[in-house]
Image (cartoon, rainbow, N blue to C red; front, side, top):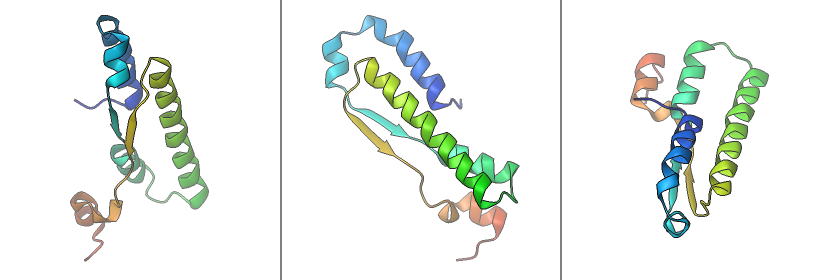
Amino acid sequence: IQMTLNQQVSKFKKMITNWTADYIEKSLFMIYIGTDDYLNFMKANPTADASAQQAFVTSVTNQLKNDIELLYSLGASKFVVSMLAPLGCLPIVRQEYKTGN
């Protein structure tokens, strides 16, 4: 099932009512984000110019910032954030866009 980070944070907010603050404080929050966002953008906007691409990147990073701030306000304090892998190296991109080696 695919969910945005924002949807996951909303679900987390509901779940933590049964957790102690100590449990949340000791937790490590791992966030891996971006691949689906960017792949979907590429498919929907194959001819997007640099300004449209930059606007999309800004939108994704702003949403990530907002979601991390919300997690922090809920008691999370330790984060690992892994962003986008090189899209041109993904097998699905190489197959669809024939990027070669």
